[in-house]
Image 1 (tube, rainbow, N blue to C red):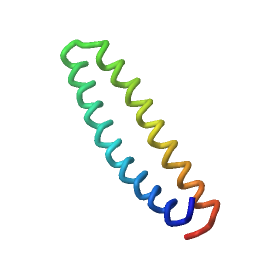
Image 2: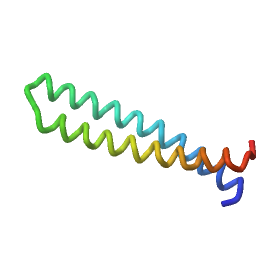
Image 3: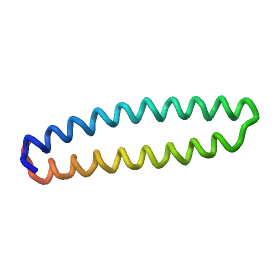
Image 4: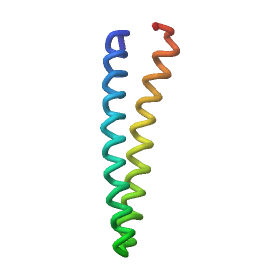
Length: 74
């Protein structure tokens, strides 16, 4: 990737991280609502999805950040 493409990807990853944070917050809200209303399966499933979603989003962001830092472009 060129430096410009790398910066564009970094901006995209930051935006995705914000969207992921919003989605994770919504999922946590639904899980707590389900726990309060005597549910069990839904919160467990949601927490598994949250973990996967957060890990995938963070890994992509960290990879781009590491590449930018390794090039010392900034």
